[in-house]
Image (cartoon, rainbow over all chains, first blue to last red; front, side):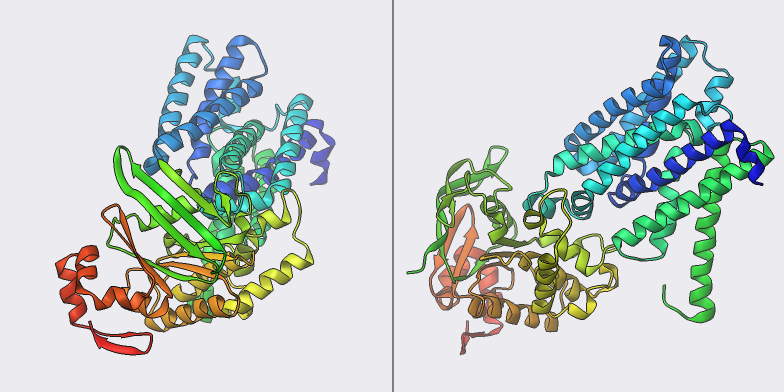
Length: 274
Length: 262
């Protein structure tokens, strides 16, 4: 099986895959626990508009996606304070705006082609050195920020008011989290595709939450489940010649189902509490 | 007279254009055990949030530990147990220890990991509330009373000089409530922590606290002897209306060892 690694594009795909396998659940855990699971979806839809704009303007589409998502992140954070009681409304507004802009730009630029297909569902063949460099830089920024701000992110995610009273700059931390989410999606588009990126942020977290551990254990488990899904999904995609976005997310759903099933078996057969 | 911990002068506040606190004056001294009661919507929680600097007053001045609130920096000297603490997301994957340690943020500082001294403080706060053996438990696996104790430990971990509690007995059974009041007594008498307690339970509060204030209809009424409040039917009518007075008549109230029919 190791012979597949003699191909440069596969090495690139695996390296990029392992980076996104690390960063997606790292950010995903905070997003899920803040009950903002749909934020990834909203930003992914905005990213499509950025990709379309990049294609039209002739710039690297991932940069187009990143710029537009960072802007959308700022707008979501602003709308979340405007609609405090309906925080999910901010997400819906941005998702719809992003998608409508994407459709307009794609149809105006006549961009419904195979290149678009790789951004929608991910691709192994097209991960270039340039892609890998961008994903690597974004990965380092995300991992370093989460390590440095782990105390702040934990407290703000658990209880904003108490965090504010304890001296944590809550507004700034919320803003950083949403910008990191945008960076995570930008890094993942090439491998998982914009349609399934948010799934890789949410499903490994859903699996690790089932194991009911402390915060940092939950975080490590989510990363492990995600890396497992990326490795399994990429191998499946290479051998069956499928889009990696689908196989990676399918693998992570299988891990979730297996975990849920083992929980049920433990309770029903062994009588252990969940 | 002990040093003042809280001094409120001519304080006014409201939401939109509607005033809900008007020209409030209050002084709470070191060592006080102060009760704050009042009907729903009488701005008890709002008043605490003004003291905590979460809300800004329309007019008036608040001084904490002798310093104006606008320049006050030692927020770690104030512990706060919010009303909604009991309804926090208990599905959150965090251990008791992780939650209590989070509140040491000011002491640990940004970008730094907690040191052994910080871990000792967490241990000591958990010992105070009797939860040391549950320090590795997930918050979701605790009872309502135990969850409340976790939040009390979180407030105590900074060794505060002032402890503000907003309706701490909501969702806690009678045994848990008794344990909570005993703990507050101990904190006040042995640790000399000044306590301000918001509650709806007029009978229990008047029996426990050293001083009492009632908020109602934008005004505050302060009683240096809590017994004075219950012993006068006019006070009850002034704060809660005629109905409450009738209700209190139905109960045997034990106040600081003195039993009487209110």
